[in-house]
Image 1 (cartoon, each protein chain N blue to C red):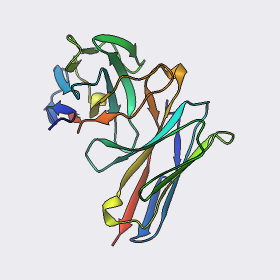
Image 2: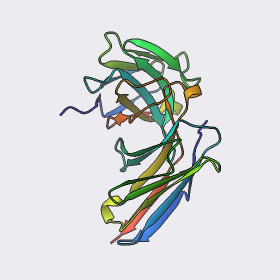
Image 3: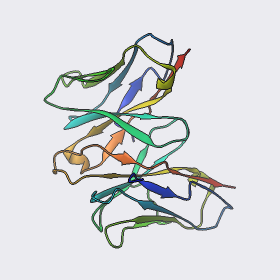
Length: 112
Length: 117
């Protein structure tokens, strides 16, 4: 079973617009990570936010974490056609051992 | 290239045949993971090694699946008597030594796509 659920399942925007993806999870976590996957390729780590952090930035990425609502959001600002990909949240939790549990992902399409 | 390497990248086989995938992790990483991903879904955890020890196996890993990491370096994932439902992308990832409480960043390979006819 998958811990996280991303919303929306798919998102289509114009280049230059911002893209926001949300992730909800069911149980307490130690950290939450976001990954990107281009079609037919492996996943690439984007950002990690720990359970005691509320917001984190990396370049055009902004991640927020609300542990009371068990949710996170990923904001990509000034999107580019190259941002077209699937985006997954993944949660780490001591009870999971040392594995990450991934959601089903959001498919982002950025039109140029 | 010092990233995670997987081969073969693609494998087409007939139902009932055995297949083996290999993963070479980043050299200083002691943790190695196998995930399976089907179309439109996120990766599902299969198994995890710390050095040569296989510490956890998912219920998804039936008796037909076996994974090894004999010297704590590369790993193999073997599927015996393949079924059409085994068709998927098999992803390998590695990570640096971490604490019990936190799993850090996973570095993924490009995956091995299996098609069972």
